[in-house]
Image (cartoon, rainbow, N blue to C red; front, top):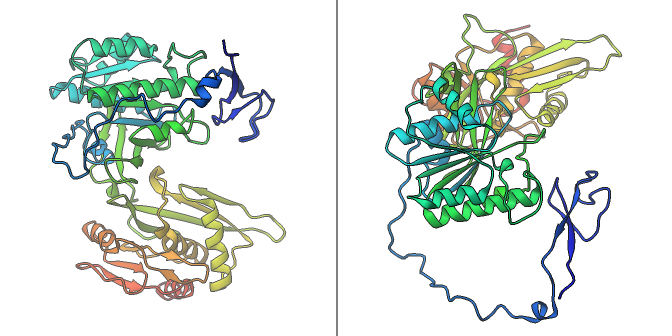
Length: 458
């Protein structure tokens, strides 16, 4: 009989070590290595060839004529947009987000709407009792929805129950960190348990054609907890973002095998659950009578959707010798430091003696590199106390040389801006206007400073 072998798996990063040690050499975390039983290695197993003895697979050509699966509408247009047009039968979707952001609420509402549309839906909760889920469904107005409900954590029990009858069109697992497979030892939530439970559920989904949505916890850094391989196993990964103190939530697709990435769906948290926001641009803009210094509108592009947001900047002069502070909400702090350096080196503006604050209104996080010019305009406007006109927006990427580089989908951004009443735009050279919206080309940050000074002399 072969001698049993053991290995030690890090519960933080999933790396495998041959022996126990206090600190993981890969991620640096302490006391995260746990012992697991490895497969027995015998001389026969080492010499055995895998080239024979298996089942011969039927290979098909790529251009074979088959009927492609039809997507299933969830009843939420914004959720369908983030998924690329709806749920694909047999797909596995992973949704992550901070606690209390609304993941369970969104999925329960989607399950109820799909069940009312005639689709079979099963909702399995590993964190709440069935009565607790019923109370939330009653608050959301879904008490009469024909959703099959269960409170369980055993993957064997769940798959046995789902396989007993006709497989439902959708299965929601809330959450994957609470699921437990009896094929492995270890508590739920460990790397091995999360990996094994996900593999069983995903394999069952591919076999039966049911779509499976897994809810995932996130770490303090905002990443989905558990092994990174979990995101590689599923077909789509969605992140539910938003500030807890803001009403609006953004569902962002970061991976999608059946659609485009970086698509977003926008929701508003209301008393009776999450409501779709069909025109998010009107929500992220501040309505005011007069223009104020430091406020500039930027047409962000989230996937295929242009969203107009307001960037707000504030500069405060400090006495000599004081250390200035830089604070950013909703944008990359290192990108702000780079822009401040470019404005000082290429435009002669002095931010070294001023505190700088930058905020994206509405709680949205902007990752579009075309926001450079809008941020620079907001910073210059705040420093010179010269407001940018309310009907003007800005977009463009700024290089370290101070030049303004062209961006993608300029016409799509300008079309959305014209629809909302904007009449002028600060944009890279060679950008053409759309309709009544005129473009003022800005070739460099020095030209941007001159233009803001001319519009409101100081």
